[in-house]
Amino acid sequence: MRYSAMRVFWEGLTGHAGWKPAWRNPEPKAEYDYIIIGGGHGLAAAHYLAKTFRKSRIAVLEKGWIGSGNIGRNTTIIRSNYLLDGNEPFYEFALKLWEGLEQDLNYNAMVSQRGVLNLCHSDAQRDAFRRRGNAMILNGADAELLDQRKVREMAPFLDFDNARFPIQGGLLQRRGGTVRHDAVAWGYARSADSHGVDILQNCEVTGMKIVNGEIRGVETNRGYIGAKKVAVAVAGNSSRVMAMAGLRLPIESHVLQAFVSEGLKPVIPGVITFGAGHFYISQSDKGGLVFGGDIDGYNSYAQRGNLPVVEDVLEGGMALMPMIGRARLLRMWGGLMDMSMDGSPVIDRTPIKGLYFNGGWCYGGFKATPASGYALAHLLATDTPHETATAFRLDRFQSGAMIDEKGAGAQPNLH
Ligand SMILES: Cc1cc2nc3c(=O)[nH]c(=O)nc-3n(C[C@H](O)[C@H](O)[C@H](O)COP(=O)(O)OP(=O)(O)OC[C@H]3O[C@@H](n4cnc5c(N)ncnc54)[C@H](O)[C@@H]3O)c2cc1C
Image 1 (tube, protein in one colour):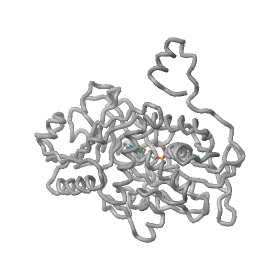
Image 2 (image 1 turned 60 degrees about the vertical axis):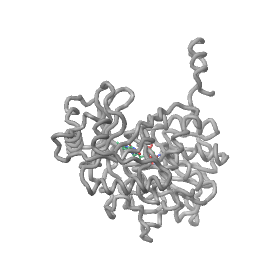
Image 3 (image 1 turned 60 degrees about the horizontal axis):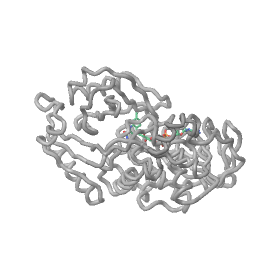
Image 4 (image 1 turned 180 degrees about the horizontal axis):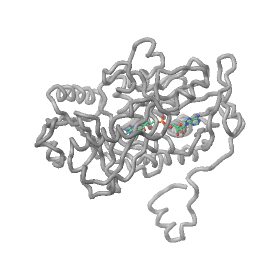
């Protein structure tokens, strides 16, 4: 069923009797050509594998429900403001896919290019932003360096006059913004399903069958399912799932929390990030201030966080825009981050034939969703990496070809 304004109008006239479930709820088949584990990026990969690469006999296995992982828990920010050549073309590819996503999926994902502004608070930081902005432009992205006057015009509510870290200006990417995260999961799921992909919810992978170094299938709580190729895209559970194949990853799992306030009148024009602490904020279409900061800083598989980081995030908010102290917090939640040793992701084959890995997204995998899905589908279909993802190799941690955007070294909690 195609969604359109005409369809909404027609259904309104006919008692809304014609709407169908957006995807089926099939029973697992005995075997598939492609199994993708994880209903986040995995849904995007299934969509491109079926629609763009015209493959069939595909299943996505999700242990919970669609959107129960980070794809439905993030702060919805999309951008392509990276410095390094290993990263920037990939994230710019993602941004271009976001720009055409709703037409591609025939689904309203509320893609809103309202701008992402990174604030700077020192001369050195401004110089670093100028360098990053130039690197972005060289890679075909957009970037503007703003002085303090322009930032003040854009966001007069920030603390310009009495701040511990005075705002000097900022790096603005106008094409960055936000996307409704649940709708991304639902839109990809609906499109993948319409191209014949089986989406198996409540289907947890508990083991892998590997014979002579080659994958044959997976054990699940709904029985054994055979497969020619298996891709793992399970974010904060990467280490646990890949351990089923006997592989140890250069990845740690940490909790990241997010917060949303009561609904307020429109005040925040786009996404704003604090440059002297870790705090970022935007405003949802319902009016809630959506914000976050650092990870909790210890390893965990719990999808909830602890109070010290709540205090830290709120201090960041108060330092940047004291008016936030008047807003009431509506709710908060946590998700499982797969923090890699250099802060960049992996989309690659593994030493096991037919087994592929997608993970290590750290703080930033939501904005990557379309490109990550596309690159994984490309890898599954052609056995070669997509041109924008050639640097995301698993063996870079042995060879030393790191993509360390922050220069923080092998400390996953700092990326
Ligand atoms: C609070 C928070 C805020 C964030 N904000 C942003 C942001 O603003 N912008 C941005 O770009 N990124 C953001 N991120 C990061 C981003 O959400 C993630 O990097 C990204 O969604 C990871 O995608 P994924 O598909 O790998 O993981 P997920 O969406 O978590 O999908 C993995 C799925 O695998 C399933 N799974 C795990 N184990 C198994 C198993 N054994 N069998 C079957 N299924 C299994 C899980 O249930 C889960 O649904 C944020 C993350 C959090 C937690």
